[in-house]
Image (cartoon, rainbow, N blue to C red; front, top):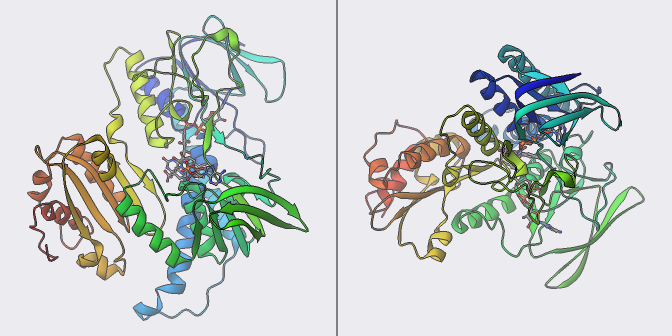
Length: 476
Ligand code: FAD
Ligand code: NAI
């Protein structure tokens, strides 16, 4: 098969599938090639995010949260149910059902928008051609030609030589979403987003969890006031986070993982039933094209692009985890929309300053914009307003009084530069901070806004008021 399109997209993750749909909405003929296949060997759209990332992890976070609430909080509400039991196979089946519904949903959206889906491994060839092969096979099954090609091949887990994966005892995040029972002793290398989220899942279900983190600062990209509060909270929940710990080796012996690491006290040994390696992800830029393509790639394997996601070759774009910026689904999707609209002649752009981040623990951490430390480092004078969740009526009614809202505004202009939240539902609350910042709000704009009572969102209002000692429900 050889066919010509206005646009060919490689990869149907949140960057690629959104780009393809937006291209189709704009009247462009578009094909999207993706090689993902599920356990049944069938294609499954949605990339890492839907298949083994955002969605399955949140399904398990929800199930494990309900279990933890039933065990730790029901009693206080006067509800007794005795000791709850976990059926991991049912929990996993529910997670798989959620994934399947959403991946099938993308297939339906492709059909509705007339995006042509091609299942297979795509390789970029000279002359704006994309060759498609069945996975692991040499024979080309289709050649697609297009004026514009969007690369959206995503990323894969980083592996460590000191802890080789066997996907049984030593696993990556994908393996950690598929355990068939609750490991008694669970080790995790890397206390980042994946380590904390999957560590929370298994800890709530009963695992003793130890996280081995190389950096001497916990969550170094998070505002330090928030990361300190989160560290204390996670510790209380039973996550044993060991920072400044350099992994030496992890080997499987007698169905156990024997791990050694070095910290300030010297070499330490720990034994686990399972070990998750969660030390970051790397872009999938290595198998999509050969040297003849002249696409500039940086030293960390990201495809080099400008702010409009144009690569060094005209008409070829790259988006999502393949390129610089945070490896987040919504960042990739917005880049997909921007590129589609630019191909269609519009002047779209992405505001990289206002991309929210969330870590879906309990409480959740969510932030947008600059941290107080970043402002300090660049010499920007700031005002800071903090409101503790313990003073929120709604948080008290919910029994979720841990955490705070922190707003950082420019000292002279009062423009909001960053909002940092550690609280229940922070992932939902941060959206209003993003909206405010996108509208170039000042802290005073937020202070003058009416918030419904009783809501967690009132804490954002109070944090803005706290900036000049006007918060009502705390002593300023
Ligand atoms: P991907 O989603 O990786 O999709 C790339 C697609 O391209 C894949 O389907 C792949 O099969 C296909 N592909 C690659 N090469 C080829 C080729 N040569 N030919 C054909 N097809 C190809 N982000 C969030 O924002 N929120 C979260 O809560 C969140 N949770 C996460 C939890 C986990 C456990 C993990 C691992 C990640 C999580 N992420 C989260 C990150 C998020 O999944 C990624 O940022 C996002 O999926 C990147 O989207 P993408 O479209 O760039 O790439
Ligand atoms: P990460 O970058 O968030 O965290 C990796 C951690 O591992 C870091 O703290 C790092 O210092 C540590 N580390 C690296 N090498 C190490 C070593 N040898 N020994 C010990 N520690 C080591 O990466 P993570 O958690 O793997 O997630 C990958 C990507 O997926 C992230 O970029 C993240 O944005 C995305 N993601 C997003 C989520 C969300 O938005 N809620 C959830 C999960 C993942």
